[in-house]
Image 1 (cartoon, rainbow, N blue to C red):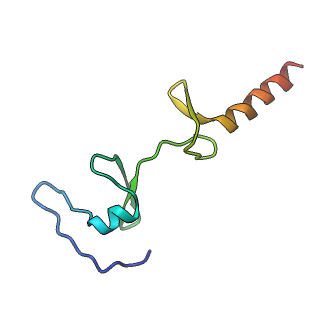
Image 2: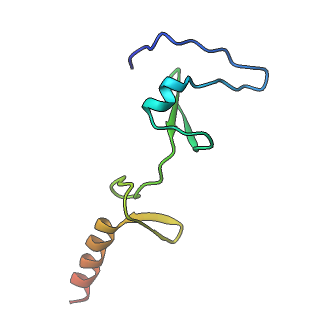
Image 3: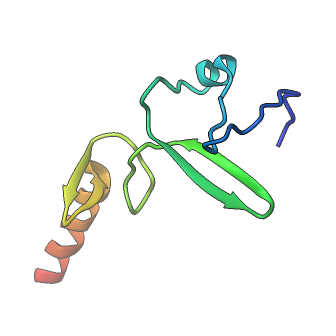
Length: 86
């Protein structure tokens, strides 16, 4: 990870402000959901983007049994099922 030199304090409620330059660079808008991860001794913030459970694609998603699947993977699964039925 590359240091930006930006330092922020955590307030009394545990909040930290993400600088506007960072939000603009990462296309994070007000009210966007953010995922929070622990990576060793680091806290990682990532813009939450729903993705395909198989390939992590974020385009053309369909929900099946509360899971997201992209169109490409859905077609592959359909072909596999059709091949099994023969």
